[in-house]
Length: 462
Image (tube, rainbow, N blue to C red):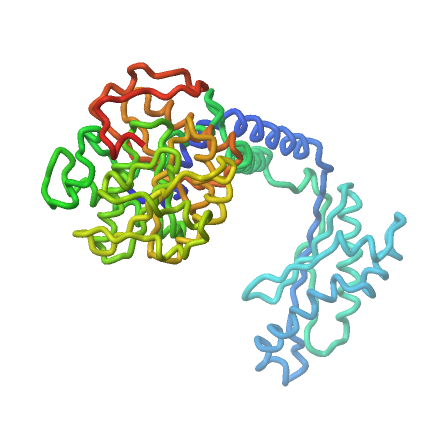
């Protein structure tokens, strides 16, 4: 099992899954890009190119030139290359051509190239007409030779006359089509990834695909048979070994650190799934790391934690609102578990509507009293305010059955949270392999009826 931070990690396997899932989008986008690119390629205007080559020879009558010719020509060639494309020279060329044009228009059709390690300049002219390309190259070459006459350093000589090109100068059609195809494939793959991010796939349950179980933090076998906190208090292996809770604790702490969470709600879709057992044992396991933990009983209608730890329920979470009690004064230390304090539910509220304020305004006050606050929530189905408990903390851990009906339960739990518009972050799930048959007497997903469980003890009943 890995921390839930790996849920968003980008791996080749996950990318391949997304691309396969969005293969239709990838194919459509790639086909469109290739069709457009191929159409533009086949209908592009033809361009003809004519080239002349000019050699720059040293002036033999100048004794100072010959010894320094290599250095001189290296410094002069960039200047001569710029001269070919200069407005002054191109205006002269335009005036000599047999068709109307201007130096500005020629600036995009004429350029010069220098050959490395050689005093040679190639003058290149382009045009949509083969004859005009040759004429431009010829007249530009003549103007260039005229500009260099009598400079006393080099003598320009033509050794490659411009000719009329017989075919357009463009990359091979097959090569360009290959490039277009590669680009189309890349854009198609990118479109598939973007589409999956913007429009996540939704399964029949109405939830994004792959979110039914979220990140599995742990699997707890025989959860319904576990006698409350016996594993932690006695430090012995029972039907749920101590190492199982430690593994769950490790995964949770990675997730909490990744999401910078200081409070966690442990809940389930229905009662009897073992969420209280998970909350209690998980809180005790976290204290073994030397951290201070507050365990809160938020099931104010059906409180349980005071029975688990043998405490009275005269004061608790509801006292913070009804009596205005100091939150720190309501915490009760647990003998035998250093660092663990329990906040019982407290007496019933005078009006059910006060639960909204209790969860959203009072519950967050306890976050600063410990390194981690673990809240034992009412079940999501059967308690209208259960989603408020989840929204009052930094994240949620769902306890769901690990049988065949488990994914259905997890999906239904996520749907309940969404239905109540609760801004919650599901940190992961705990698969509870309870002793009872998970699929027996399961009501319809949208029913408000609660299943019964004779096997679940006090710690697994809430």
